[in-house]
Every structure is written in structure tokens, then in C-alpha cells.
Image (cartoon, rainbow, N blue to C red; front, side, top):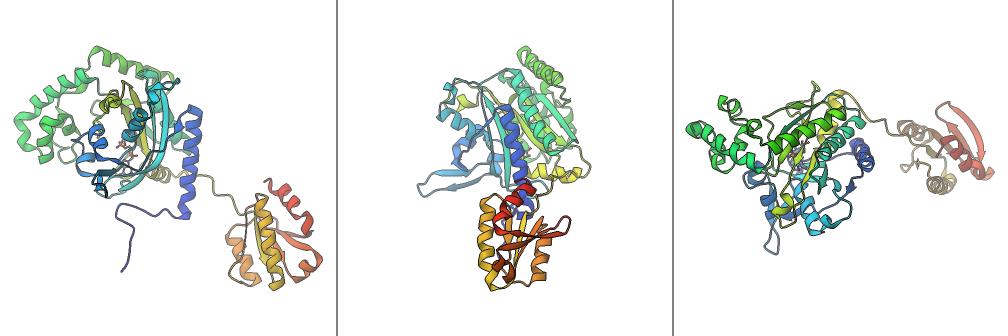
Amino acid sequence: MKFQVPKGTQDILPSETWKWQRAEKIINEVCDVYRYKEIRTPIFEQTELFQRLVGETTDVVQKEMYTFTDKGDRSMTLRPEGTASTVRSFVENKMFGYADQPVKLFYTGPMFRYERQQAGRYRQFVQFGAEAIGSADPAIDAEVIALALDVYKRVGLTKLKLVINSLGDSECRVAHRAALIDHFNPHIGEFCGDCQSRLEKNPLRILDCKVDSANPLLASAPSLADYLNEASATYFADVKGYLDDAGIAYEVDTNLVRGLDYYNHTAFEIMSTSEGFGAITTLCGGGRYNGLAEEIGGPSAPGIGFAMSIERLLLAMAAEGVSFEAEPALDVYIVTLGESARRPGFKLLGELRAAGIRADMDYMDRKLKAQMKSADRLDAKNVIIIGEDEVTEGVVQLKNMMDSTQEKVPFTELIAKLIATLNV
Ligand code: HAM
């Protein structure tokens, strides 16, 4: 029987993991600068949490969740996104009582959606997300957007487009919803089954339908922009004002609706405009979710956040031809010749590592030439050669691979010398 990685998932091999580590390091640094603190929540939650918070009528809840019954007969779901868990934790841990509001959190971890596999779309993917909960200040909307953009900037991406929209508050949504139903109802027979059931439950989602995207009734549908009440329009104008002041360029797209139900007011996406970037161009999505904490019994705690997958961030980097600085080379490779040199060589290896020097040696009983080849392949900056004579004399041959010089160095002076030349 041949086993394979499950469809829509991938093994990330050492030739790639270092890039993930770099991306995560940058994410941690940027979050630190913005004072967002990391939260780690479980990978699975009660199914009802996602049904309630992400929304019953969304594709994510209806079609894409990995749901199972545990041995205690409870319905559990592998998290498809991080906002629901973060808000659950915010309410459960009474973070609304913290002296410093809003509470600014971020997470990086695997999410699971049973989606059709294609480039940039996986069934297990890693999302970095940030959430600021407890403030309804339009400035924090701009801050969250700036944070996402800064991460992309720090990894070297430049071909980006920020698209924003306002989804208004519940008052405008009710009016817009009624207008949408009136608009689609006479022609609903022309739409897919999903849209037909969306008509009454969530007509806004029809605008986002992948099957009916070419239907002209989508383009002529009443725009939410025309239904924004004064408070919502002012809020949106303020968010744009803060973005302008911060020098952040954006496009307003009144058709931008997000695939999850919890949004109101600000919604945004960041796309890659790089030519090489495949069909899915959205790198990051987010928005405001006032009312989500109340939905699960918490107090009123307006929030805003976003999430981006590391997979798409790395794909965008590849498409733009930008890369992280290469991994640092190995500092030292130890070559031993003959039985009597092995144990002193192994002991030295331990001492080098204890001094913070990145070192390795041969474990395949290779001949001198093959060991030197290994050192080359590993891009070692130095090679230490120990033979029987060196052991007797208490010295090693230290070869600097960068300038090909070689010198005899006493064991006792070796580590200090390496530390001085390597800057460790
Ligand atoms: P979302 O738009 O569903 O929003 O996902 C956000 C990002 O996650 C996408 O832009 C994309 O980078 C990545 N993503 C989603 N699905 C996949 C997939 N199948 N494969 C690879 N990457 C994927 C949310 O998840 C919200 N929780 C964002 C948010 C946070 N809103 C407020 N706070």
C-alpha cells in the first residue's frame, strides 16, 4: 500500500521550512512593533461556535468544515478560521475587563477547509491573523490594515492592491437586503440552487456566487453604498481619512463582500497584482465585526481584524521574484581521519556547538575527499581536519573555505579563534 499526503495538504520540507520560519519571524516582529500579542487557541472547537459566528449560510459552514463527533458524542470542528476562536476566548477569559482596551491579539496556525484544491487553495493552510477587539475607533481599522501591509512590505512584496468597502451597520443591511430580494426575486429561477436558497437567508451572498458570477443581474444589483446611513457613511469616510493620512493607497470597491457573515462597516482585501500570480489573487482578507462577542453571550465589544495565509504570501513572493536572504552557511565542518581522531572530533563538535558555533561532522565513515565534498555541499565556512598526528600534537588543521588558507591551531585556542572570526 502506497501512502500519500492527503489531498489539499502538503509536506513542507526543510528546503522550504526555513522560509516559513523567516515569514513567521517577520510577523512576530511586526506584531511586536504594533503591540499585538500572540494568542494560541485549540485547533478544534464546538461546531456550533463556527455555525453561530461564521454564519450558517456561508460556504465555509455549509460545505467546507471538517466536522466529527468525538467519543463524548459532541460535534467538533477543525477550525476553518481564527476569528471565532479568538472572540470565544476573549469572552471566556473576560478580556473585556482588561485595563488596556482594545485587546490586540494575533495568531499563526493551521486552519482547515474542505475546498476544491487549486493553486493557492489548500485544505490545510496556515493563517496569520490579527484582531483588535474592544474599540469602534475608525483609526484602529486603519491600524489593522497598516499592520497587514507592513508584513507584506517587510517580506519584500510591492505589487499589492488594497481594496476596501463599507458593509454598513444592521440598519442599512436590512434596507439593502430588502432591495436585493426585490431585485433578484423575479429572476431567481435563472440562478444556481445555492443562490435560490440564499435569496431569503442571505441575499448578499448571491453577489459573491462563483457559479453565477457572469449573470448581468449581479452588476445591476442595488449597491450597499446607496443604502449606507449617515453613521455608517461617516465611519467609512473616517477610515478612508486615516488611510489617506497614513499614505496608504486603496481602491473602493462597492461590490466587495466577504465570504463570512460576521462583517459590518469596514471590509477589505489585499490582492497581489503580480502577473505571475495565478487565478486567486487575494492574499489577505478582513474587516470589522461589531456584535460578534455579544452573539456568544459576551458584552458589546466591537472588533476588527484580518487573516492571510503564509502559503499565499510565499506564492506572491515567488511570483514577484523576491526571496528571503539565504540561510546562513554552516560555520564549521569537522573532518576526521582514522579511528583515533573520531572521538576527539566528536568531543570537539560538542564544544563548538556549546559555544554557539553551527557545526557538523561526517557520520557515514567517508574518506577524506568525500568528507571535503560534504563540507562544500553544506557551504561550510571552515573545515577542521583532525588526523592521528594532530591528535598526538594537540592541534587541528583549520581550513578557511572562503579564502582557502589553512593553518595549524592548538585545540586550546581553537574556539576563541573561531568565535573571533565568525562573530558568533
Ligand atoms: P478569509 O477571507 O476566509 O477570512 O481568509 C483570509 C485569508 O486566508 C485569505 O485571504 C487567504 O490568504 C487565506 N485562505 C483562506 N482560505 C484558504 C485556502 N483554502 N488556502 C490557502 N489560503 C487560504 C478569514 O478567515 C477571517 N477570519 C479573516 C478575519 C480576521 N476577519 C476579521 N478578522
